[in-house]
Image (tube, rainbow, N blue to C red; front, top):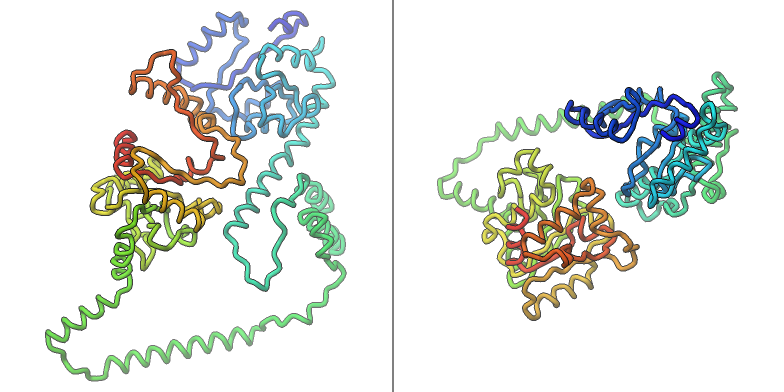
Length: 496
């Protein structure tokens, strides 16, 4: 406002925050008037408003949030792609992608008053300076490929965790060899600009795109012969081959139907009631599922602990463990593994049959289901939980760690204690409470501190927030922990 008055610029302020209720809007206008904004110079739009229409009338975008975000703010990305100069704090997630004075104008997040210096670098006597336009152009070029590297690395990590190659296959490169400039739009734009180019030019473009996607190291090991069109070495099936295959399938189907009709016409002797009863009992004993469940319960008898692996649906079956130490619990009705003694959480807690509550409780719903009439499903002194994603991320317990854990719990009485596991070779620089604040709009730390202070009657001078280990977001988010069964019941009562 001071610079606008000095340079005699007519400035309109658009605030994009809060909700669209009349109460919020009137309170916001009253606050703007109290702070000295000129009349009719402030417009307020809620967060649900379409930001694309607002950016058409904007010259500068100021990002005023000083909270650490888990990812690059979408508002800044939309503004950069619309070739609008942005002013933002020098937060870690922002400086990771943009450079001050080249792609954006940054100010010190520890001293928000330094934002005035950023405005001085943009505003001139009659409007925006040439520097603002050049920075906006660089920001637009950067926004096209800025998040492509993170997206590609995330997809490659996912593929590495789910794809299993045969022993005779040539393995692809590791995702660690993916370079920052892996993805570029230029080859695609060139192809679109060529229009009706010749087939030779198109093959050259495809070869160029493949070289960019594979990287220099892969390109040296794999070359594309763009001039070779000889396909005589390939033995493709012809239409006559497909016709022969269809005739064979029809013949087999007719033969199977004839055999079934012959079996139905064969006269079979009638059985007595005793023989029918014995055959029914024999077939029931031959069912593997019931026997496996009984064997699983017998194997766990005498063990100190059982770790329940929480999963949803058949897609998680390959990541689940087998053996007496682990037992699966599914949050999807009727999705237990065959020939296993998995627990159906929906059958034990009917509220989970409602998708609203099942999605609201997430994996805590499985813990509530185990705690509900726990004596009918769990009779061991220790209980543990682990998400199926732990095995998918290769951060589950190793065999030696399982033996150490069982020996530890078989010893002396530990009372209220919790054991968790986390890989030792990972970067453990994350903070539990900071992550919790990011996921809960910054209210996690304050609410927990107030709750603990009220529960235990702690005075104001004593820190009420318990210290949490820096776990690299593994055990706390994947539920990789065990505790005594009585302590687990206390925890569930407090959680409920």
